[in-house]
Length: 379
Picture (cartoon, one colour):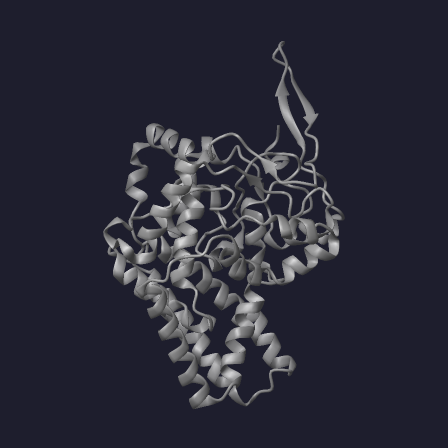
């Protein structure tokens, strides 16, 4: 089977409608290789899995085959400087546009093309910092995350940490992993218009869904995040008027809407073409703007390796990563998600959460939300 068969159909609009990635190589008893199609997923329900999430098993296998992988682990010193540069850029642009109407083409273009890209970069900076990959200590990482949160306009870094660590530890578990769509979303958005609505406003789904599925306990870090963000917004509006804050909020909306980089939200964990592969990577150029979050199988296998070293992880263990299907384009993932009837909100793998695991998740929630900073290690 050629490596091109690992990619999912159309890489650009000029190629027409995507070809389903449902053809796989299989050997018969005589050793001959033949091709067979996998059936599409039932669109009326999620794919309920009985197997363990795959990343822990693959991590153990890679560590056994390549013990030197531990040399890639640790924090990335450059992250704090990148965060400082992007935060400074956004504050500068917000103030620069204070005399420009938010309805003007210039304002909208800058908010989408520059602001949306910059704030998406900050989303993923906070993701990187959530894993304690900017500093060797826990507290400096938390403070940097709150700083990176400033141009986003809405406080979320403290809450994101708790939900995201649970996404790693309890991936796919219903009622714990808030990255999963709810049955309400499945029932009401399971059509083309629904998928357009979801893709356009997905940032709101990721912001609001966790509160309905699994509320967090309020901690000192939530309060600090809220206080600092509201104080920053107040000073910005008081000093320069409302337009700078409108610019930042528009940038955040565009960053999580129909933006080229936002395709990674759908690309990472949606199921495609009848496969039960729960995580997909993307190795294209947009990773430069996104802390290499496209290397998502690699990230879930080794969350303690910073994005800057994930390409080195893939190069170290090609026998594990180069044989897995991956996405060739984030923007085309969004387009294919909308126009393909074989993928939708239903295309996620779920597991039933056992009582023991729910109890463990509760304990995890206490740790990552700041009750036990000593237990807050790289996840």
